[in-house]
Image (cartoon, rainbow, N blue to C red):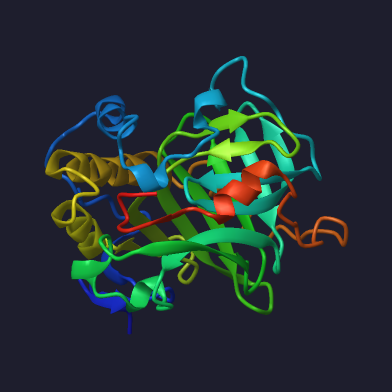
Length: 292
């Protein structure tokens, strides 16, 4: 028997989740603000958002919708940057619609972790944005993932799969509209916005839709990462993603990325570059999530 709408659970990554709807059955609004997409982005895409999530290359990055935005070639290794989080990926396709990449299992990444050795999810919510942190190099574990950055939109879509390669679901990660930076390697720059949507792969045509980490967004306000108005803007972005993407099953959900398979060359793990930028990134730390 399927869970009723409103059921709560804990996601695979350890975050709280609420079943808020099903594909094909309308969309229950998450925000009551009625904020436009442009207004929500304007509240969130500010230079003083918080110090720890500032990316040093952002000043040279170009909005992905700009005619001056760099393009990446199929097979090219790039960096997908979320401030102090830096991931590696390999380009599948890049065109006016958006960037599609593959993250092979074992690909290198930098992540911020609590300085005392705990996992982030093991830190109580009331402390999560206020504990000291350091940077650690790790790798992408589990099956590889297709990740899509639609041009000009404040989200990316991650297509997860089971160990046997069958689809597990699609993760709609709310984040700032992507910017791009050229270089060797080049890449995209964004900033994670805490709240996410999960579209389960079961029951094709009426997939369960889960709202993930709403409690963490509240904690982010209480600990100073967002203002209350910015948090409402994030909720509004979830509504726009639901209406524009999830409810309609629009691109990239309609293009078969959940079953796409890499060839041997595409599936080679991607390494972090050896350069001064990565050396500096490895040394980042802060006394709280707002510093560093």
